[in-house]
Length: 143
Image 1 (tube, rainbow, N blue to C red):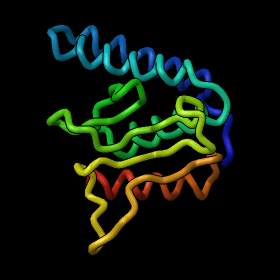
Image 2 (cartoon, rainbow, N blue to C red; image 1 turned 90 degrees about the vertical axis):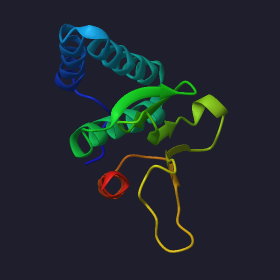
Image 3 (spheres, rainbow, N blue to C red; image 1 turned 60 degrees about the horizontal axis):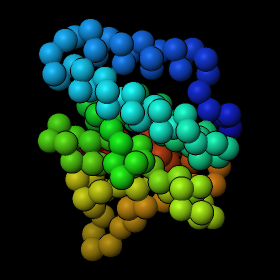
Image 4 (cartoon, one colour; image 1 turned 120 degrees about the horizontal axis):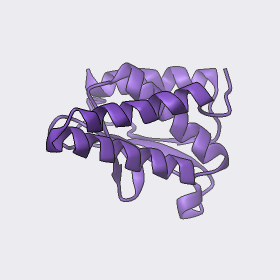
C-alpha cells in the first residue's frame, strides 16, 4: 500500500472540513478550523517522504483517533487531546537535516508497557507495515 500522499479527493475533503468548522461559528469553530488549516499548510510546505508520511499520519489520526485535534507544535504537525495536550506529533527529517523523520508520542499517550517503552519512531517510508504499526500506536495512545 505504498502511497505518494493524499489524493485530490482527500485534499478537497480536508479543505471542506476546515470550511465546515469555520461555518460552525463562534470562536471554537474558527479556532479549530484555523488550527487544522495551519497543520495542512505545514504539511503542504513539506516535500518528498516527509510530506507523504505527514499526509498519511494525518489520515490515520483523522480516521482512528477523531477526538484528537490537529494543531501545529513547534512548527510541526501535531494532534492534541481535549485538554490541548499533544498526544502525537510528526517531526520532518528535512526540518532538522536528519536522516529520518519521526512520529512521536508525548506523555499524554497511553503507550505504557512496563518500566520502559518506545515513544518515538523513525520513519523512512510509508508502507503497509508502517501503516499497520502507526494505526496500532495511535489507537493505543488514545485508548
